[in-house]
Length: 492
Image (tube, rainbow, N blue to C red; front, side):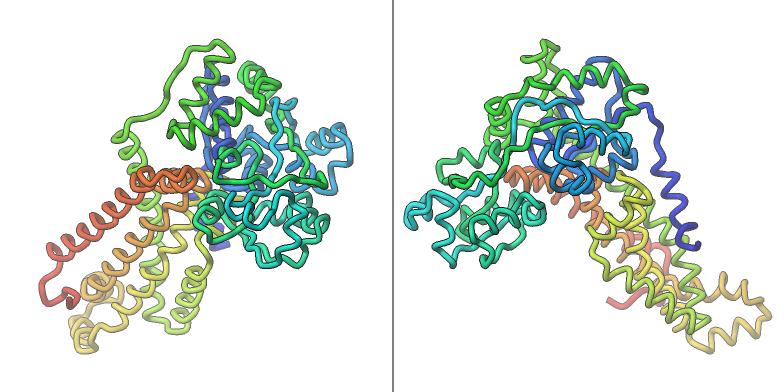
């Protein structure tokens, strides 16, 4: 019950109205472009649109759609059939529609292109080893496979492929899709999975291996959406569904290339496609550099400040109690230490069923991570006050509450402030992961830069985040110098 009480403010923070159509996308370029096209078509009807871009993998988007945190996102028929609804969707398209309807969801007609998985190798290595087909891989047991985590798990991915081609004995390591491509080019791995519409699949340095047993099926691109959109936003939904049958493979590959190699923003590429295909006015929604930095800075500060304020409100009383009640102190410190051992991304994902996507789960996770340094430093500071000073306060006839407020907390304040500063600086770094669940902040350009192999974009997020951390640390140092006499300051 106590945990639910702590999380209640974040639930309220995450509650939003239904005025906006919320369109999500996975964290790869094609999905972002398709979501942006849908957004442009919805805006053309006057609808307000919130783009929840690069929210992570399939399960995160699917759970967000079911929970009503997003209203629509691009998906693929094979992913629906073999991963999301495995064992529930039957064998026909009608069975798939029925399974979705039970969840209050629908899928659009195919958008016009299929996106099959393919396996790729460096051209030089493939030629040297005379590997042209997937079946040739079985003759080379020393090859290093670096496959995306999703391809490794899904039924129609690596498990089916390795069984069909006799590759069960091969060791495949899980990689982020974009990082695997870079590792292939630098020779760290030998074989990767790609999407057929990836611009990398057309890279002259890459050989796409023939699927000679035809085990990698083509997945049709579709849109998944909540049925309630038919009632809440019929005009916007009708406009979005105009995408069906309008995007062939060549057009999708060209858009992917434009983003990856010409360094155009996905929003610009999507707007140009909508203008050319649907005759709507071209609107470039790309922001200027300083506008992006200021907006993301405000998002990042919000994540850090709200989570830190909540942690101070909870951590200070808990730390004081821990100082006076050693048994409680051991339990409190053990619990907050356990929270620190949970990987950041895992904790963010755990929060999604409770709080959805966006700022609320990120703030809740950062709040939990902030507790340990605040509780520990508060308990240490209060417990280590010299006994003669405590006795003097008692001799003056001060009540326990007044002793705490007038003597003990002021004497412990340097240690308390050090814990708060540690929590603040750690939060600024950890908050970058919030971009993976739609919380914004400086993590957004960092992850986009990794995906697009754009070092400038990575710096656009990393440098301001580092400067913000330094500024916060300098602020707390200034507060310490201004508020505390020299004798109370922490030794350097």
